[in-house]
Image (cartoon, rainbow, N blue to C red):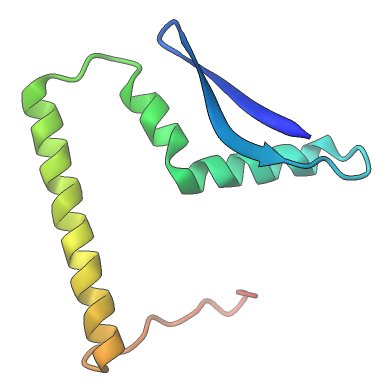
Length: 94
């Protein structure tokens, strides 16, 4: 079993990510851990805490994130209603 403990700016944060190591294959477990952390946004959060973020920069970032979320939601809604075609899946996708 593998738990992620991340060190960010002199504070230790325990991330609630749990990966099971099967057949002593640590490389595969680390790959799965990295994928989960990427999906949860842990890397983005760590990168954001490396340096101080001014309040004006924080507001601009949050506003941009909100716009991105709203656009994504609207796009998904239009796709569900059939007004936009569904995104094409890559050929090699499972």
